[in-house]
Image (cartoon, one colour):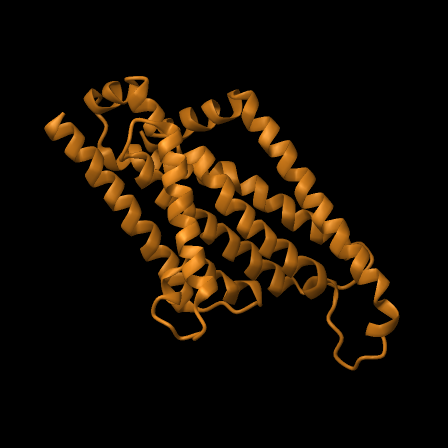
Length: 247
């Protein structure tokens, strides 16, 4: 049943013309940023050649690209999560799901998996751009893997929070604004923190992505993303259960 719901959501996402427009604009932004970083890297090759441990193409191009993608996904994910529950409730189709022989957990997980599958090609496009440089230079595959994994986990945390916010309202626009405000607030907490060990800073998903961005696979950061996703998915399930009980 989870696979059925996920397939339905994916088909609905790709059936909307606005989705293809957003993806086209997003790909243009990624390509422009990638080429800009590559051009800047090529222009300083003569200076880098004089350094004993000069940064390679992976550090100079891939790391900034994935960092920019992390911020762009923070703005993008709420646009897609807003309709997954809020719009169904507005269109009265959530009532059909609630009365069907399917649990709230299956509904939430199906929608969550569909969104991750939708975001996966976006992350893969960033990875493929950098891998194209492998034909002319040597890449740090470990750093690339860490960045791709970190970006996927970060996108998953955005999706989980967005789904929970979408379950709180029947207005998609309100869900999008509220989710974006929550994510932006977490980002501001991380950006304004001065102490790297600040407890407030550790609450922000972007601060945990930084370890992956520099090539560090930290079990603490991995655990944070898993707990973050699980917490908001459970809250979304509880919200749907309450709706079923109290109408």
